[in-house]
Image (cartoon, rainbow, N blue to C red; front, side, top):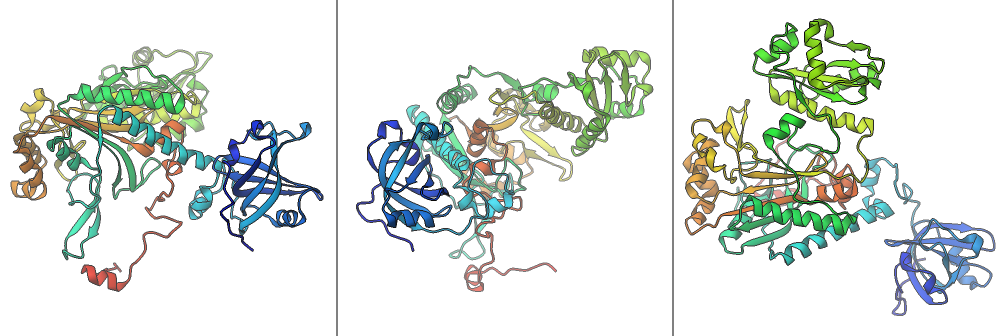
Length: 597
């Protein structure tokens, strides 16, 4: 039967905080039973809380009532124990536990709550299926490694608030019920009962509100903000997520980069004890794509892209020739020591690039004994083969992997992803190695072949580079944005831009995006009106808070740094959300649910 706490039951401190300095002290501890070991005349219980484990001891000197309760205790029972801290015998010291030199000789004992046998063990580094862990997330969160991650997340939030407060930023909350907007991912819509047929949206970001705060004169804004996007999920994406959201007035790109490099220096020092060198390296978007096939390049290893288009411009090999003649390219990566890969492994690389729309993968293996094998060499003449090897600086032991396509973007995507895939396979990426850079000068717009229109690369409030304004009407694809992403180990950790603060440029941007005046005034008229009353130049940036935590902890899946995440289909296995609601609630909202046959 469960017992209740009374006013004398006050926890002395957390289990993991006790040391040999506490020997001889009377203490009170509370937590969960990690395990109970019954040795006949001796019982040990490992008591766990968020700080760690301490051993409780019950022996012939323990009151019988207390001993009997300890005998009945099972894993995950909730316990309050009082007793005296004592040293363990020399042979019983557990050097693998921070509290392994001591134990508590229990004199009083309460079972506050019993437990069924958990569906999985509450241990670190569990190999339990993710679906089972998420179904019982409240148990999963008891595991020490999960608790460390969530507490690390809290620590990062404090570092963030301290740093930005010290640098003159004001923390301001923005609404979670906002006006739906047409750009970006799909909105999560919230029906209004008071305004039938009208909807709020949950914010994809506080973008417009933080810009309006700059017009309001607050000058420096910060918020650890909740954001919502109805989009397909993956390892680093959730339908609801958290941003470190910032905005600054009377600044340039350089000011934003400087304040955020200072933030990263602070984070790495306080969170990981690492010193990072600033200023961080920079690449333009064009340079990043040319060298790494990605606008978020991973600099922890080589395997850079090499353009073979000119080298093979006159080739008779149809695959390469067709790509070049169609305005595309032929590019390659060299894997140092990659000749060790088997034909089966190379074939798997070919299947991998097909997921990025590449039609295939040509390869050239230069064995350690200087012999050659290739999937395509017989289609090239001797001079072309030699030219490729020279262009790639190939030496015995190397593997050359080539993708050709009429669209450069497909070549970039395929080789950019392949270089990372192989880097993980070869083990060249070492734990604790962090490489950061800024990527700048992004295209302002990207053209959608299916919709036959331009979309904003970042968002429609990004300022074009001044020298490119001339192309907005005649060649929008040439216009570069004053935009910047911070990339950590091949992941976009954050991004931002200088914002448009001139009404005429903002209206022009809407027009280029295919909006008629009536449409953009209906959707964004409040912003354009605000600009008429003196808008300061302003710029900002947002870090993906969940991604930053996962990068610092070297965790691949951001679900493991979020307390209650969603799964691939945006549902929550623990509570069963989303779920149908009753007809009365729907009627009050003026909504009818129509199910497709």
